[in-house]
Length: 365
Image 1 (cartoon, rainbow, N blue to C red):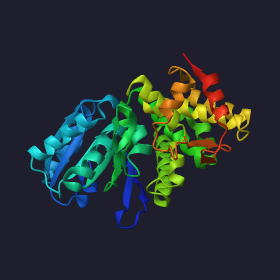
Image 2 (image 1 turned 90 degrees about the vertical axis):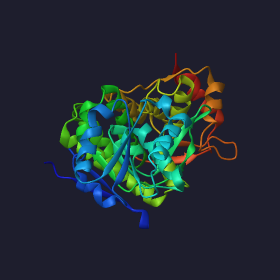
Image 3 (image 1 turned 180 degrees about the horizontal axis):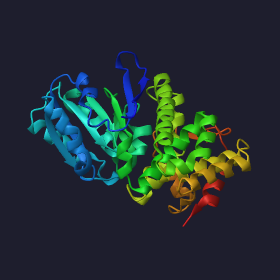
Image 4 (image 1 turned 135 degrees about the vertical axis):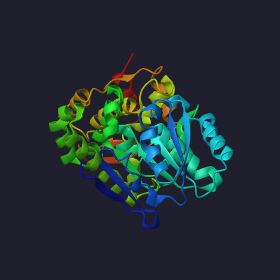
């Protein structure tokens, strides 16, 4: 059995471990110490349930744990209040108490929904993240951001609420569609761009192995990504400073997801195209060279990600959608921009005309 790698998210008495390895779902001993009582509700979806629900549930039952399965529809389109109420319904019908632990088994949508349900059901119950997509393993499962989408904006309703533990089972990536794997790579590349130049260069050298799901390369990429995320979260849990840098490409990307309809573009696809918009604006500001922009573009292309943003109905439409963002402050759109590969900054101090030029020149039908 492959060795388990463990990281710690250092948040004082709310610190928790991230375990990374293969076949972790079938190891109840990783979960049992974190249960306040022997009852769990496993929240998953119609795609993941046939693959992994019993893999994690049966060993827990064998250890004397009562398991309540809650199977939701799959997709970003269901990350809303209606689906959230399905979780509440199941918890109430089964008379779940404050000592019942929720287990999020799935990708980022399931993790965000389950975490928000945990934060709000009985004003707070424990939960565990068991991410099954690359994107959720390297990003959304770590750091305690939970929430749902609103028709007017993505992730606008939510809470900061930390899990008890994160189990990243690399074996689950073997059943991911290629597009989902690529979407996760967008977030892996993001860490290199915002704060880890050496990691960016490592990804450039190893992108073919990552695309092929080579175990050693994938384990390292997940570990290094989680290490970066854990350091940022420990320094800035509630996104008052450094943590906002993790949103590179996201303000543009969320506009794309919102306008196209949630789920039409995968989150990572929209982030990749959004990151190219941020790189173009950074170049116009004189912060990135043409050669650096080209390196970023080539890596996204090698990772099988889109690099051209869609036309959402013109520049003003883009700006309007980008204004529906959590990082807007005093009416100004704050953007994460590049001051080189491995260095980023959150700023609203940029020439608005240059932003319009970026949007006008880089969006495509």
